[in-house]
Image (tube, rainbow, N blue to C red; front, side, top):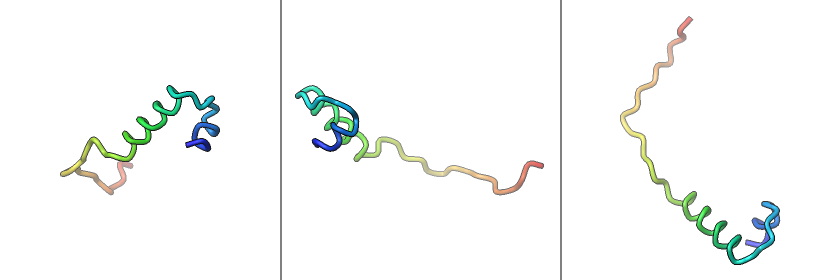
Length: 45
């Protein structure tokens, strides 16, 4: 946590630690899934 806070140029207060922890938790759990998407590999030229 210290290195993350230091890399973000944050002081390391309780609020900073809470913000980083919540952000990392959001990044670790996907919220959206894409399925059945269609993509064309043909050139449009």
